[in-house]
Image (cartoon, rainbow, N blue to C red; front, side, top):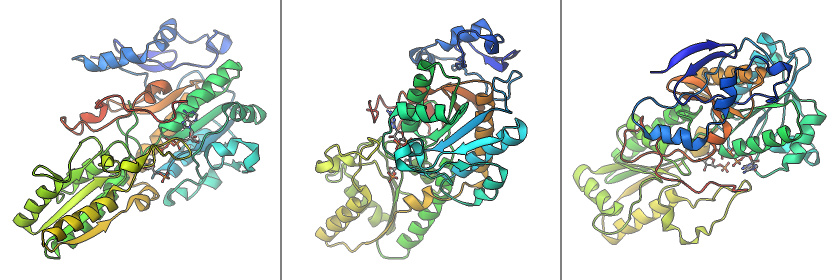
Length: 442
Ligand SMILES: Nc1ncnc2c1ncn2[C@@H]1O[C@H](COP(=O)(O)OP(=O)(O)OP(=O)(O)O)[C@@H](O)[C@H]1O
Ligand SMILES: O=P(O)(O)OC[C@H]1O[C@](O)(CO)[C@@H](O)[C@@H]1O
C-alpha cells in the first residue's frame, strides 16, 4: 500500500519505488533549500528499476503526485512562458493550450505567455513565424475548434538554436505538447538548458492519438478518437448489412499500436475482424484472413473489418524504410491493399461481394475533443503549470493508477506502449510486446 505524505515540496505519494522529478538548480541554491534530501536521491532512480518493479507482484512503482506546490520557484510578475504543439494533430490540443494559459494568467498572475507557431519551426528565425501572444481573450472559444491554434510541424530543428531562442526571449517555463518525438526533443532541450546553467523549466504534456506513449496509461484525444470511430463502424455495418455479401472495411490510425482499433471494436461490437500491428496474420491459406472472411460471409451474409494503419505491413515488399521529416516510418496503405486483395480473392472464386471502404483517419484526428477529453485536458494543462511554477523540469504530466503524476521524460520516451494480445485491454496499457525500434535514434 502506498501512503500519501505531505512534504514541503507538496503532496508526495511515497511507495517503495517512488520517483520524484528533478527541479531546477540542483546545486542547492536558495530557491532549492526546501527540497528534502530524499527527493534528490530518488531522482536518481533508473528506468530499469522502475521496469523491474513493474514486473513484480504487488504494488506498482509510484510517482510524485502532480498538483500545486507550497513553494513557487518563479516570480510570476517577471516570468515569461512559452508553449508549443508538435507532431500530428490530436483532439484536445486547444483545450490544453487554453487550460495552461488560464491557469498561468488567473492563478499565478503570469502576464507574458507566448505561443510558438508551427511546432519546433517556431523557435528558428529562418522560418519567420511570428510568436502569438496568449492571454484569456486569445484563447476564448478555441475549445470548439479542432487542430491547434498554434499550428504544428514535423522535422528536426537544431537544439542549440531552440535554446538560443529561449534565452533571447527570456523564457522561464517551456511547455511542450507532443508525442514521443516531441518529448525526445524536449529531453535534449532540457539537457542543453542545464548545460548552459539556465533557469528554464521544460514540462511535457504527452500527446498521441494512438495512445502509445510508454508509462502514460491514457493520452488525451484517444477517447474522442474511439468515440468517433464507433460512428464509422456503425456506418460500415449498416452499409455491409444492406447488400448481398456486404463487407464494411474501416481503417483507423495506429502506426505501431492498435489501441484505437481494438477499443473501438469493443465499444461497437458489430466488428468481426480487428487487424492490429501487434498481431501477425496471413491473407492466404486455410488459416488466413481471406478464408476466415469467406466463412463469415457464408454464415451471416455480411462482415465488418477494422484495420489499424500499421497492421499487415509485411505485405509491402517495397516499404524500404522510407521515413517522414521527423524520422517516422512511412507506412503503406493497408486499407486500400486489403480492399484490393478481398476483391481479387472473391472474384477468383466467383463470389459476389460488395465492399465499402471508410477511412476517417484525418477527420477524426482534427476534431475538437469530446466532453470527457476536455475535462482530462483541463487537468493536464493545470498540472503542467503547477509543475513548471514549482521549478520542476524534464517532467511529463501523466496518469498513473488514476492519479495525475510527474513522470520523468526519459522514462516516457524509452519504449512504446502496445496492446498485449494475450491480456485484457485495460490492463494491457503498461505491457509491451517487446522493445520496438524507436524512431529518431539521434
Ligand atoms: N530524437 C529527436 N531529437 C530531436 N528532435 C526530435 C527527435 N525526435 C523527434 N524530434 C522532433 O520533434 C518534433 C515532433 O516529432 P514527430 O513529428 O515525430 O511527432 P511526435 O511528437 O512523435 O507526435 P506524433 O505522435 O504525432 O507523431 C519534430 O519537429 C521532430 O523533428
Ligand atoms: O500524416 P501525418 O500528419 O504525418 O500523421 C500520421 C500519423 O500521425 C499519427 O496520427 C500519430 O500522431 C499516426 O497514427 C499517423 O500514422
